[in-house]
Amino acid sequence: MIDIFNKYGTILMTAMGQTLLLALYGLFFACIIGLIVGIMSVLKNKFCRGFALVFVNLIRGVPMIVLAYFIFFGIPFLCNSIMKIGGVTLTALQAGTICLALNCGAYMAEIIRAGIQSVDIGQMEAARSLGLPYWRAMQRVILPQAIRTMIPSIINQFIITLKDTSILSVIGFPELVNTAKNVVAATFLSFQTWGIVAVMYLIVILLLQWAAKVLERRLKYESR
Amino acid sequence: MNPDNVKIKVENLKKDFGHLKVLQGVSTGIYEGEVVVVIGPSGSGKSTFLRCLNQLEEVTEGRIIIDGQDITDPKTDINKLRERVGMVFQHFNLFNNMNVLRNLMLAPVDLKQCGKEEAKARALTMLERVGLQDKINAFPHQLSGGQKQRVAIARSLCMKSDIILFDEPTSALDPEMVGEVLDVMKELAREGMTMVVVTHEMGFAREVANRVLFMSDGSILEEGTPEEVFGNPQNPRTRDFLNKVL
Ligand SMILES: Nc1ncnc2c1ncn2[C@@H]1O[C@H](COP(=O)(O)OP(=O)(O)O)[C@@H](O)[C@H]1O
Ligand SMILES: [Mg+2]
Image 1 (cartoon, protein in one colour):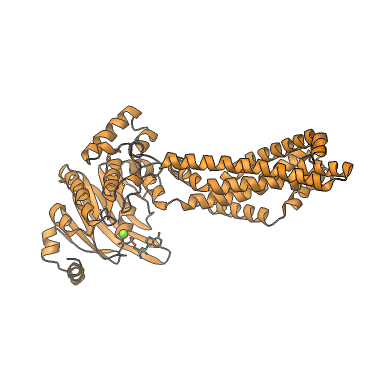
Image 2 (image 1 turned 135 degrees about the horizontal axis):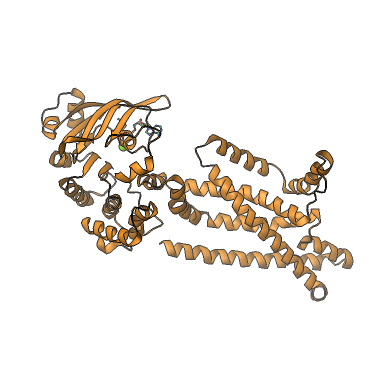
């Protein structure tokens, strides 16, 4: 194991970097999508609620590997061969980011919807009765309280998404699993290689969990 | 009370929730500086009536005119109206993510009624009026029910509203805290605030109300001075209700 790590450590570490990069991009856009769709799902407007419902169920109903193939191969094919736009290509990083953002975004939307709905309706009514417009009330009163209850679920979703990056090895993105496959192909040392990969994921995720605990404790302390 | 100035005029107000007809044609006028207490059995539409007055509920039919302005008109700026019509809730609804001072300063500053300095000065004045100036840094969960409700009252005073609606402000309180909240309300009444109060505190109604409305099944069945309504109720439903609660 040590041998493998000495020889392929740098490559695997670089791949871990790619994994984290992809996860970061994906999570960034997922947060935006999640916030928008999550808020849409609590609005009075029927169109907004309908859109949110369809989006969330569509994404949740399709395995991520299918979504990945669809975006990476399907979308360029649609543009180039069917719509004859031509020259449309997606890099594995772009397709991977879109895929993670959509997938994680749908779950984030659900977390955010539940978080907003967990805030007592009286908070919104009090804010509105003082004359605050809906969005202002949302921003100053509802979301700050909702986010506090959402933190554990959001961190959990971050961890799931980080692990889901491994699925994107199928579209050839050089993240950790893809790279490890190449290492195994070159060395045939599958036990050692996959063992190292597992430990690498574990360390990153434990660090993330620890950071989440600290954050959670600090938020609790600030509000109480 | 100023009988020359009708502050709130309610004309044939109706409110349905789907098929449920909750308010079935309520009409009344409330004078500037008047204290009107609304009593009636639970489910009779008292809260709904109050919530229509600041448009937390959209009315189905009828008109509500405040200071000559028809607030049921879709063109009315509801947020502007609400700055002048405060509301105090049964469950206080202080903003849990803010301390007392920020609860009081949020709306005046956010709505650009005044600058931060002025808002803080107002907040301190209002907290002093409700006897809680030492609680400016406390969070809502650190206050007793009675203190929360007094802060909630101070919060609507900070908006300089000239009408305050109270929806069972003491119903969620332990008995020993009811008095402190009622005292603040009495003080407001003396100072000439226009108040519409839904309550089961008949003692308060007797002492402070200029007029008592008895609501049942979405209509006002009886109204008059406290002496008239409590001393000599005309409607059998009023008599029946008063027998149960007194
Ligand atoms: N948002 C709502 N949706 C449906 N029904 C409601 C709603 N709010 C109140 N109601 C109904 O309207 C009736 C009157 O309620 P309310 O005004 O709260 O009465 P009160 O305050 O006198 O107890 C009740 O039957 C209640 O169930
Ligand atoms: Mg009620």
